[in-house]
Image (cartoon, rainbow, N blue to C red; front, side, top):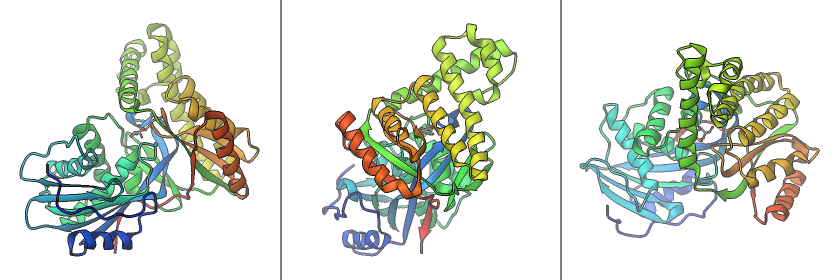
Amino acid sequence: MALGPGAPPRLRRGVSPNPAQAREAFAARFDFGPDVVAIAPGRVNLIGEHTDYNDGFVLPMAIARATVVAARRRDDAVLRACAVNLGREVTLSLDHPLARQPTDPWVDYVLGVLAQWRTIGHTAPGMDMLIAGDVPIGCGLSSSASLTMAVLRAVEHLSNTEIDGIEAALLGQRVENVFLGLSCGIMDPFVIRNAREGHALLLDCRSRAFEHIPVALEGYAFVIANTGVTRGLTASKYNERVAECREAVRTLCTTSGKSGTHLRDFTLDDLKAAQNAMEPITFCRARHVITENARTIEAAAALRAGDASAFGALMDASHASLRDDYAVSCDELDAVVTIGRAHPACLGARMTGAGFGGCAVLLVRRDAVEPFTEELLAEYHRAMGIRGEVIVSGPAAGAGVLH
Ligand code: GLA
């Protein structure tokens, strides 16, 4: 790896990536305009946490924060990629086997997509590429899947080959599982690729059947609150939870006599019958997953029915289960949830994403969002000494190419 010549252009950080701006910045950096500008949103999971790798159900929506990738095909097998927000640029030959770049881990997501693109039988195109975005990094809003899905859209366009939305999500998951060694489920790339504006997406992570459900909770909006902390523990604790779930499945197969492969295959009664045969921690982990699957199905029904109170109550129960049984919350997330729930305008609150910091999502009366946000941030600052951040976003569309 070598740093390419010239400094990457600067766009303002944390500003919505304006495609026209990205196009201009690309032209300023690479002399010509891009062949394609692709965009992919971040996502917030409304409910169904740590269920995807258990073959269960999730209910996320895409948000109006996004990654923009401007790209132009080159005649040689060279990748020149420039990450505007980070002020970094990397030039690499694609002739060699694609290897991770420890000094520029952001480019691993680009290389991971190209490696998987090859795996499904295509040629990785040489490219000049500029990446910009405003999905907060490491905060549970899936900046990484946003990047991989934007890169994939660009690569598809430059290769004149469009793949199916489910195949694209699976490719995104393999970037994490195979190239980066994280045992992530399919939720993030799936919703980021396949979301529909105005809708949440209910996904059965086993069959990959999905349903777009209008987000129409009359008079209520989802508020995302970023605790401003990331624990760095996420990858190791995440893989530990995956292993604990597998352990629970092994015991449940023996005690129930069923030949299940994932926690999805077992009921709460199966689990209760197995309680004495497993470690208390394993029991709690499995109880979270089994009850969370049920809550997700109920929450989808509440969303279809426009029942904000029922949806809020399920969010509360989800948070309690993630905190007490799955142990993936932290003091800051608990503080945001408790402070938010103490406000009369808030009907439900929970941590969202992998946990150990990052964001919470709260269901708040629409006409009270502004005072609610001010009070939440002030109270959180008083309690924890940290300045949080709030994002209010309706459900956005999935990844695409801008024309
Ligand atoms: C991360 C993973 C997802 C999912 C969530 C927890 O975001 O990437 O696959 O497991 O954590 O629900």
